[in-house]
Structure formats: C-alpha cells, structure tokens
Image 1 (cartoon, helix red, strand yellow):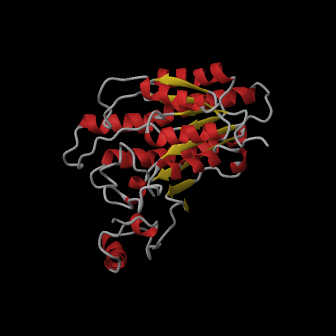
Image 2 (cartoon, one colour; image 1 turned 90 degrees about the vertical axis):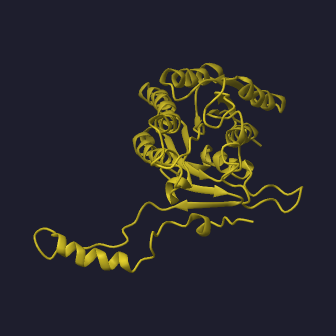
Image 3 (cartoon, one colour; image 1 turned 90 degrees about the horizontal axis):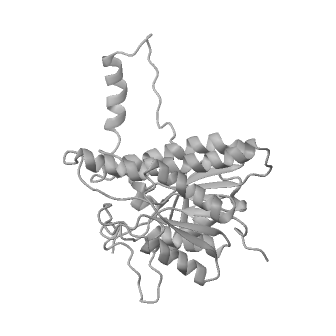
Length: 314
C-alpha cells in the first residue's frame, strides 16, 4: 500500500525545531522527500549566530528512519535565499510539490512602545518570508504548466495565528503579519488554482520555543505519559492532510488546529447593515443608527477564541 505523499517532494521552513520539525517529520512519515529549512538562530527574536545544526539534525532523523531529506541553512526573508531553497528542492528531488511556510520570530511590544525595527523585522520574516517562497514555488509550478506538463501538483500550507483572529495586545507586528498571511493565502489560492495548486492557512496552537511563555499554565498534560494537548504533534497531521491529494478540494481555507481539534473558520460575515434615508449619510443619521447598535453590544467585544475553541488555563 502506497503512502499518501509517496513520490512527492516538500519544503518546510523553520523546520529545525518545534512545529516545523514536527511537520517535516510527518510529511516524511507520509512518504514525502523533504527539504528541511532553518536559519538556526537560537533566539526566538531572530538573534544569535545562524547554524546549520538544527536543520541537519532533522534531516538526519528523517534519513535514519528510511526517508529522504536534505538540509538548507538560510533566511527565507531574503529573496534570493528563497529562490535557492526552491532550486534545491528541484535539484535534489526533481521537482517541488509541497511548500509549508512555518518560519517566524517574535519581538513583542505594545504598539506605543514598539520600535520601527521590531515592527519591520517581524513583518519581514513572517509576511515577506511567506511571499518569497510562495513566489518562487508559484513560478516553478506555472512554468511547468506553461511548458505543457499535465497534472501539475502543488500544495501550499501557510502558518497564520489566532493573534490575527482574536487580537494580541502585545503583538501588533505579529498579529498584522499573520493577518497579511491570510490575505496572501486567499489571493494565491485564486491565482494558482488553474495550475493545479491549492493554498491554505492554519492557525496552530503549539507549545514551542516561541510560545512557551504564552501557553504557560495552559492545558498541561495530566500524566507523564500523556501527550501535551499543545504538542506540535497535534498540528502536524493536518499539514500532512492539506499536502496530500485527498485535500484537492480544500483551497483558500483557514483552519484552527490544536489538541485533537480542527475548526474551519468562515470568512467575515456582515453583522448588521444600515442604509441612509437620504442621498448621503450625515453625522446625525450615523449617530442615530450606529451609536445605539454598538451600545447594545458587550464593551470591547472581540472573538473570544480561547473560549470558543476550547483552550483553558489550569
């Protein structure tokens, strides 16, 4: 019996640790050949010396288990590095079939305290990094289709966050980048569908080096032999599914995933609609319509993701 991803090749960015590592291992377990990308910096804020060791260790782990993998050291926020990453997949495995964008950093600060560099660096790694790899993967797939190849296969799985859905007071840069990734995903899904490519985004909850303080005290394992409800291993299977032929009809979607739960997020819906009784709205009419409407709603109403989707402290 063949494996779901047998004969396919994949790139996973930020795959030297945490969530990316779990995703790379899962894709390999399902039969894919994997390019393991990681810049290898020790700081979750992108600080420290770059190192090939994290990517090489994951690639070696895949190879030791009988799979095929190569390591790639590089900053995917650099345009030419992203080009080289896609070229490596094509050189090593003959083609690229799956792109999983996971690499990211955190530089948390309230909006009134955040520096320009703290804003730019997070937008650069998350949003520009997603664009860079997506661009060169799309060039690869479109080029094959234009050359007359039939049955071009492409899957993009991007990483957004509930910080975009629910807001995160101390992460304006991160929340903005993750919202931008959703927009990039839906636009890419529409643009590449004609070539046999799908693009989807996930909002994962996982206890990793980047989120250890965020999830401190949340949903701890009840016993030593119990899998952490926030383990990256709960997220990786969804990435494997979205990378597979089984997900051919899943395109332009946003899915929240953690601890044995997957939620498909609807696109924004209109909550209320008001029409002017005149040719054009005036201040008084808007005040008479909108002020009572918002007065009846809970103050500072937001999408309470932790309650709706089942995350509890303790």
